[in-house]
Image (tube, rainbow, N blue to C red):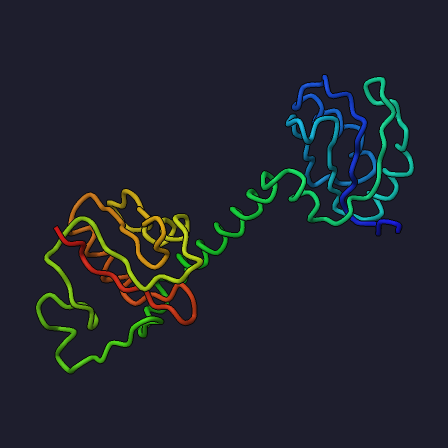
Length: 228
């Protein structure tokens, strides 16, 4: 069955003695004459030796390059070119190298959106617990928006986090506050984490600002001081 045309072309039979950076530069110089090249994936692992992927912005450019450069003597070896089976083949072939980059971009974008929304709408309601707020509870000593708390500490304890929470998301949320040091996730437990600040006062500012912040539509983050 013929492979359907797409923006990514797959090249093999490349001279594997060429250094990776030189190879990518040469491929770029050769293929960019046909149109805008978004990315070139070339690795020197055993599985990927002598192969590369070139990703074009325009489908017509990929098609033209495939036709014009088929069999082109590249470093004394004729290139064999075809369309990648699917655009996602890039990710599969490099075993997450290209995919991780895209994943990080998406995670960073999502984290930035979360950080931007943090100051807009503090939300109430939790996805794994329901708090029944009694009048006066919020202003009572040691309580913050209905969440029972421990004595002030420079380390915050986060709970009720959604499954997709990652270190980057939480870092983007908390690093907008002075004194932020680091986020520590708990292996095997996606719904809790610790955030460390330089002082308990700085931790308290972040705690009050982000208490009840929704990371997803159904999960509101619960923040307390960590137990000393």
